[in-house]
Image 1 (cartoon, rainbow, N blue to C red):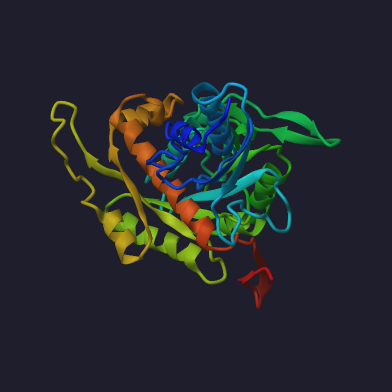
Image 2: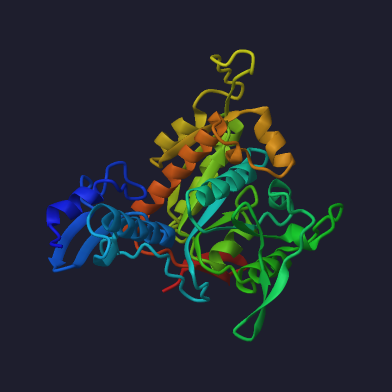
Length: 380
């Protein structure tokens, strides 16, 4: 049977590339098609940075051509991720974490704004999108991720990797998790000075076997302090997401959080700001919105600071209930909450792709002491 190029292109019109709205022919993802008898070679370019997206695209191409064109065609697919001059993989310099592509810090200027809730639901949304995801709960003094993932009673097991004993993260809902909460009793307060907390974090980072991850989300403590510097000293964070509520008190602290990442010596790109508890809609009045904490405060802050606005999450009782019972609200299929968290996550991924195609990989920072004060310097 003779294979024609137009038949191949027509078959490929049935496939939508992950992260694109159009089919791969309309979007320009198909760069070249060459036919040599029953052999077909296809060059594809996609923007989604995940290994999962590349594999999914390859499998779909094979299936559709074998089904629609010729069942015995020998197909070679060359897939390239579109990242001009800059790799989409987060190149970790210094201490390596092999297999982890992107590291996202989720931060807030103050406590109680829902940072851990956003982290948990972003992680679940990413996993549902097909990404390989891990969460590092770096909130040393108030770890809540184990409760939100219903793994509070779990303990990480040991696994042997190249002759070394490593911690195996606890896993639930397709997300790998490590938290200081796994190593303390529920009623035990963590009373540690900065160096001890930093040592515990380093163990969870470097003595763990995270495996292949598209995203490692780091749930930072509230504020701007020692733990934040320890994380950025240990790891080159790809980008940061800042969570705030709309009221002025929270916005003032969120502004400081954004400013911390934007300091010249730290220089971690801010992917955007999330507005949590944006409005309240009573169940009996579904068309009403009550702006209890103010209206669009975080959105206005994002515009003022020239950073992207990633989305708003409403003040809904079921979000709190879902977190308390260890089943993140983003898992509630077909609900407005699932849609809200999906939109937030999708916007974050888009900003991450944009960041990876326009900026060089982030480097870990170097912390030294000068005249008794902490000075932060970029590694050369």
